[in-house]
Length: 491
Ligand SMILES: *Cc1c(COP(=O)(O)O)cnc(C)c1O
Image (cartoon, rainbow, N blue to C red; front, side):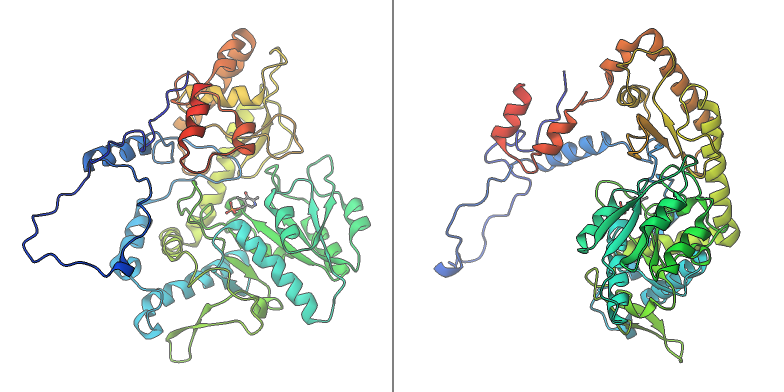
């Protein structure tokens, strides 16, 4: 049985309110009729202040977060978000700055944006950066629009195809489709790299570019990355780097030097700005000198006199976002980079990769590895446990982890691995935490063989038990609807 949290509407009592106004001590006046509302007020919940605060505080405590526990959600880099970042973002000069303030009055904020552009460019090996996009997928969209603008600007009108490997994150083909280009799938090989023969067969004068995540969604560094870039460039195509997995190579490899022309950074993954629940995020983008004129603007430039100003790249594709992107995220990422410095950033990746391999090696004899290779910052295992009944699936393992107080890893992604379990421990977890997680995973594997009903019943300790995920996706109830909710609860 699920124990539902009552909806705030269900707690409402007509006539209750959270504020009391003093008796009128001035003459009453009437508003002109045309200023008066003609229709009744919407159906608002009516509660006292303590009832409202308790309701929201209670439901906030039901939220799992990096502040409450280990969060090995693969592909998402749920690392610790240092509280120092929050302190910086909360400084009044940043938090209370108005986006329409004159550049002369906002030099500190502009300097921060400029420096972050410079740092990100240096870290990934790109001469130009724009901080406009609000998420990774938004950065991808900017990138493919830039590719299109670049080709069209050269009078190259036939480049309508984007190559995407089968191991791509779902946002990659979605992005290509949204820009109106055609997605052409490229196969992977047995080692989890892009299949070079298939790539050679698919590039052509119609190729606008290729979108590639490296390390890829199997958590593997593509061993032929330089050849891949050469093949795509040889037909005049451009290389898009999905930088969501940048946490594996900070200070070790620069995508700009590997051959990528454009990349998005997920500041909310790699650079420790909080994420989850839909944002706000930041999908900064960096690119080669040839593509720089097309970057979305405004970007911040430094004048000869040392002052900072907003400027639009010469052939900018336009804006991606109102004002200057999610500025609070930029402050956090700047703070993170300055706190760690170059050596610290490299250590981030070394530790992220070490932690991922530690977990992988401890689990792989029980949870088979999708591809038997050293991984980068995450590993892809399978929930196929020897000796367990066939109906014990990865989903059951994930749900059982909830009973033990862990957020489950990513499951059933990447799509090319059956029963995938994608584990990304991140660098900010201690060996003790990883050991408890590993022991728990091994315990669950034993249960899968001996007491599989425990896995099928899980989670038993969470307020909401198994949810009907298919129905939630097909018939979402996105706003308060008394009847729909009553119907679901009575089932
Ligand atoms: C997270 C992720 C994205 C999308 O980033 P959002 O900020 O969620 O839009 C794209 N590609 C990969 C590989 C990712 O892990």
